[in-house]
Length: 494
Image 1 (cartoon, rainbow, N blue to C red):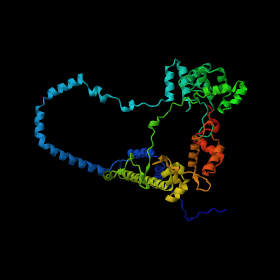
Image 2: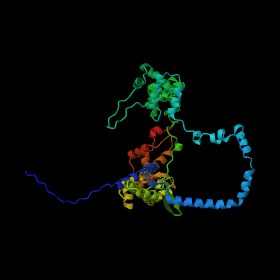
Image 3: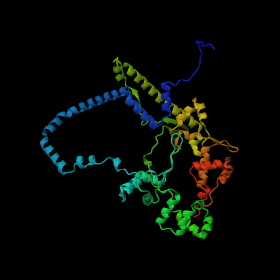
Image 4: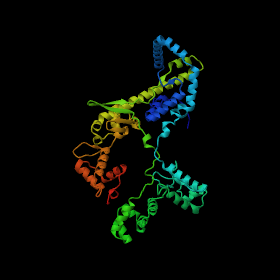
């Protein structure tokens, strides 16, 4: 076989991601807070970027000088009287009195408002479960080894306050082995025989039952603490599954006790706390605030979309500094690159703003009934609907609507909230899945708690009352997404 070298001319098309395009895509998918951080980084690394217009600052300075000149001119008429009054003041006597006042009287600098701590230090915050337990641990009579074991236990509590020693998933998909309290004891240097005893002491901290390994242990700790009857403790120990399902007849039959006693025991057990960390939080909800990217304002009979530039830095190019640096041959190439980067950033931020507003206007146009009348009138809509209307790709719409928020007359929503799959409805137009979720929630909120609706009953009522055709498993899925228990666990007997 003979090998030959030859040239061949061929034309082809391919998409090349330029640095400008990469930067625009990156900025487009950033949230508002992430964009602010990105702008701050650019301001730190690019000397030609400034947060305010140098020309406007110069005009403000000129206006200030003119105002100061006018004020000086107005004061010149009274200057002679002021100088005479100044000469008549006994400054030595004044300073002496001033010193005495600071030493014996109210000294604002030493003990007044200037010496008060910042207002942030006077604000209270919700109790944190970890800090609350560590404080009790430090105040308890533990040895250093036992205290170290207690810290490991507290560090392995989940959001409910239970001790979670299950393995975690590694990046490669495998899992670490599950731990036991004896593994924690080995790490702390505590003898295995002492580990259950120290754990039991921790479980009797406030809140009672914290660091339990399951619901049964949590309830038993509380029941023993409050002096429950033996048969009540036996119900918790051996019949917790029947108790969860309200199968009181089975408990009475297996324990050979009257059904009335089981009812009374269930009443008392329901008063116990199944989630020890309920009243504790790792975050202060009062400090969590979402700043909307756009506002929807109703102006007479139409809705207007306005972007929110409050708190967002306006970027400008410092032309005076750039011209001076460009005169330096050694800095010319460096400044040229920084100038191009600054122009790209300013253009990308402006393009991001316009894109978000354009997408928001399209959403408002397609979901006008929602903005007028609420979530029950939310229409089915997918990314393709908006992408075709604004002439963009679906991936661009996805980036625009992720972590972007819109303030509306109906409340604050993420832009992704308005994209819903459709549910068939008899003799009417399709309804959005989010509207169906809210219909299910409203139906369950208004149900008789002694006879809650089953999933099939919800299916039947949706079909009869609203003409919505939906499968039972879909109702179950939506109910779980809303955090609503099954009907057997929603039933209130007492």
